[in-house]
Amino acid sequence: MTGTTVATTSITRDIADTGRRTIGFHLRRQLMGFVYTIPTVVFVLVLFITPLLLAARMSLSSWGLLTGEAGYNFPKNFLSITKNQLFWPSVVFTLEYTVLVTILLLGLGLGLALLVQVQSRWANIMRTVFLLPVSLGLAAASLLAYGFFSPGIGPIGPTLDALGLAHGTIQFLGTPLNALLSTTFLIVWKYAGFYMLVLVVGLQGIPDDLFEAAALDGATRRQTFWHVTLPLLRPSLSLALILCVTGSLLAFDQFFILTKGAPNNSTVTVVQVIYREAFQRQNLGTAAALSIIVLVVLVLLNAIQLRFLRGGDRD
View 1: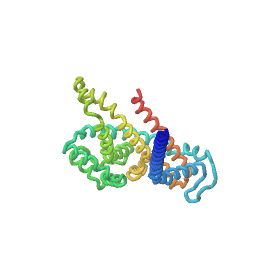
View 2: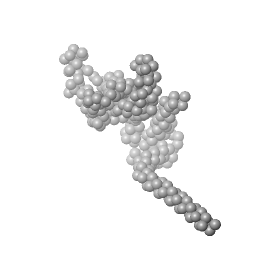
View 3: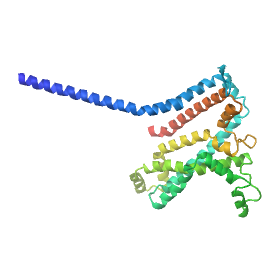
View 4: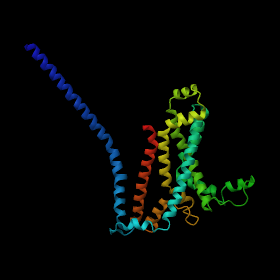
């Protein structure tokens, strides 16, 4: 009996030691995981949370660019936004630009992704060619486009004139429609390769067995695309749509460099209105209030897009 008791006690002690070691191991792993997240937490706090809180405070106050805070004035900043003559036209123009750019970028990105999804030397070369504009900064690309669109030094107008496709000077940025289309062309040229890459990753994640099964069932290419490719590409399309809509609604650099709102303030975006309120009218309070409204709208739009695009996954 004594030997049995000693053996039982030893086994119990071993189990307890093993349990303590396991708990200690998990605690160390959790502690190391927390340590690894500290840089990210600091980054988010310093560069996102703090500016967001400061903008929220500014939106509730009379806050001049040079004079600083002059006391709370809620809801004056928010009410004054609707009285801005550029606000509603900028909202309409930004929405038009967003719809146009989103349709073109996602459509062209998907077409290019389908074109280069097969692994081959030529597909790799085409991927590289399509991705080259992405490496160029947006400000640099806008300045380059400004030179190309310039009626004085740009090569596009004389080339079209020489080919008989146009006559006289072409005002690429001289009318509201031309300015919108020219800027849209720049953005599509620059970012189509990026969305191609996003969608290529999604296409390569679809198992080949599904396409083989669809072919054995007699499905045509169109039926395979609509009933196999698109449903399984939903996560990548969701990501691409959110990035495209968010980037388009926050458009600033390209219009600031190419048109500066001309002609007749017809190409002013919402972010340009924020810039003008903050740095031309020197009213940081109103600019912050409009920034908060844009942030809320973006969060709601992204939530709606995610709910809509992921809705089919739960059916």
